[in-house]
View 1 (tube, rainbow, N blue to C red):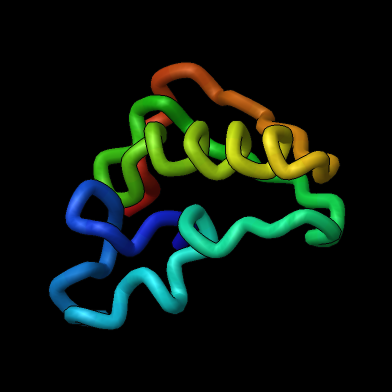
View 2 (view 1 turned 180 degrees about the vertical axis):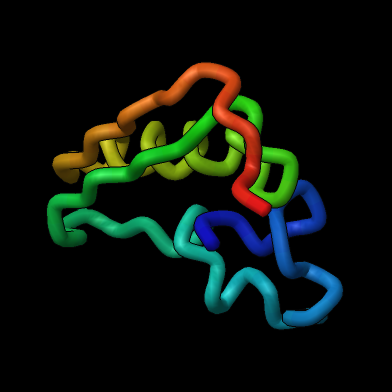
Length: 76
């Protein structure tokens, strides 16, 4: 889980405190280097959350790589 907002995954389970545990919303300078693998076809955890996390990490001056896998569907 990268984004637990209503636009991401798990918001209904997390509830009103979603922002306190959502990695995409907790990025700060000095975060450890991160490598994210994500498929653009994922229907469970939207790709835009991974992209937002990646952009926030870079903006904060952190090292983050996003390995994009085009149209890879969610595993069942």
